[in-house]
Image (cartoon, rainbow, N blue to C red; front, side):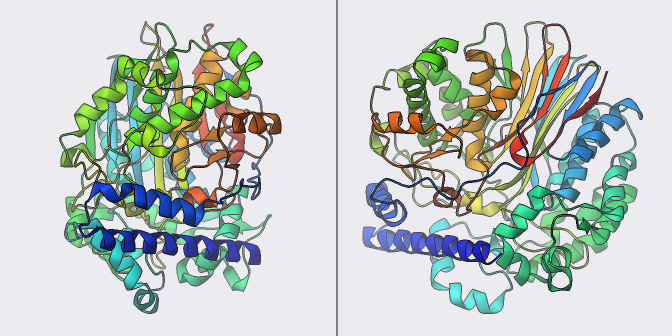
Length: 626
C-alpha cells in the first residue's frame, strides 16, 4: 500500500510541475492563445517528464487473468469485464425474453456496482444500437456536460488550478477534483435507449444490480488493484474509505463488498425512473455532495440534462471487402479508429507481414498512430464548433488516409511532422465496455466511464454514488493554427472522449462483430490492433485480443509497450528511430501500472456460430447460450 501511495504522490507532483511549466510559458508568450508557443510547450514538457536517456522497462502492469479461449454460443452472447454481470445480461435475453438493449443496460448497471472504480450512474458514455429488422443503426450520446456556470476560459482554469492549489487543499477534501465533475448522463442515456428500443419493464433491468449491491460480491482483482493504486485517495475521502477501507483496513482478496446505500439508490430509480436522479430529493442530495468539493453543478443543470441520439458514422471497414463499420461520432472517438485503419490500409497487410517483417509492421503502426494523434486533437463537441464536421470527413476519407501513408518512411520524426497538435491532458482510466448480440440479430455496444479510477475521488455518504471527473478531458493548453480551440471548457459542452463502441456488418446486414474497449487514450490503438490482428493478420480471436500491444500518441514522445512485448522487437524499433520505449504508463496518464486497453467483443463466424471474449487484462468473462 505504501508504494501505491508514493507512486500516486509522484504522479500528482509531475502533473503540478507540468501545469506550472505551461502557465509560465503562456505568460512568457504574452498572449494565451498563440500557436507559436506550441514548440516551446512541447520541448519544455518533454524535457520535464521524458527521460533523456532510453526509458527502462518498468512498472509492469500485470493482467488480472491468463489469456483464454473465446466462449462459443449459438443464439446470443454478452461480453463484459465481470463474469456475473455477463451472466445477468445473458439471463435477460434467454429467461426474460429481453433484447440486446435490455441486456446491455442491465449488464452495465451490474458492472457499475462491482467495478465501482470504473463505472456507475455517477458517470456517462456512449452507446451504438443496431436494429436488425429495420437495418438502422443509431448512436446515443450520454456523455457528461459542463455546468452552466462553469467558466469558459480554460487557461484561466489552469492558472487557478496551479496558483490556488494550496488554498483548495485546505477548503476541500479532494483538492482539484470538484470543478472537474461533469453532469452525470448514464441514466438519461439508458432511459433514452430503453424507451426507444427496449422491451422489458424499466425496473426489471435494475434487479440484477440491486441484488448484487445488496447481497454483496467478492472483491474483484480489478477493484483491489484500483484501491491499491489509489490508496491515498481512498483513505482521504470518507465515502470511499467507508466502502473500501472499513475499520481502517483496506479490502483484500476474499472480502465481500456490500454496496447497500447504492443498492437503495438504484431501487428508487428502478421504481421511479431516471427523473428520481435528476429531480427532487435525490437531485438535491447530489448537488449537496458536489458543492461540498467545489463543483458548480446546480439543480437546474441536473433537471436540464438530456442525452442525444444521432445517426451513427458508417463507412467501409478498411481492408475488409464487403464489410462496414458503424461507430459513434464526436465527441466520441470512433473516427480515430477508422482513421488508423484508413492510413494503414494501403499496405495490404497480411499474415506474412507480421511473420516476416514484424518490426517494420509495428513501426508503420506507430507512425499511423502518430498521425491520428495529431488529427484527433482537432475534435470536440460538434455542437460547439462547426469545423468538426470537415475534420471528421477527412478522417473518414480513404484518400486522405492514403496521403498520410505516403508520408510514412523508414524512420520516425519530430512531432511537427505529423501535423499541428493541441496538447490535451487525457487521464482516463476508469472506464468499462460491454458488447451484446441477441438471437434476433440486434446488437449494442456501450462504453461508459467515470474517467479516472474512482472518478473525482468522491463517494456520496448518503447515496453511495461515486462521481465522475470527466472535465479533466476538456483541459487543453493552447489553440492550434486553425484557430480550433478543440476541447476547452464551455458551459453545457460535452468533453471529447476516445470511446469507440462499434458494430461491424457484412453485406447482407448481419452483425459480424460487436466491439469496443475501455482505456482512454489507449482505446483507438488497442481496437485497431485487435481488428488488424483478426481481419488482416489472420490471428485467432484469442490471439487477436491477447497479443502484446504497443501505443504511441505523439506526446509524450515515448512508445508504450505491454510487459510481454518481445524484447527483440523493441531493439528493432530503436533502429527505426524510436529511442524511448517503456511500459511506465505514469508518463501518459499519471497512473502507474495501467492496463493498455480492455477489449470486449462478440463475433459471428461464417457458419453462424458466435464467439464471445472478454479481455483477460481485466479478468472479465463472457456469457451466452445456444
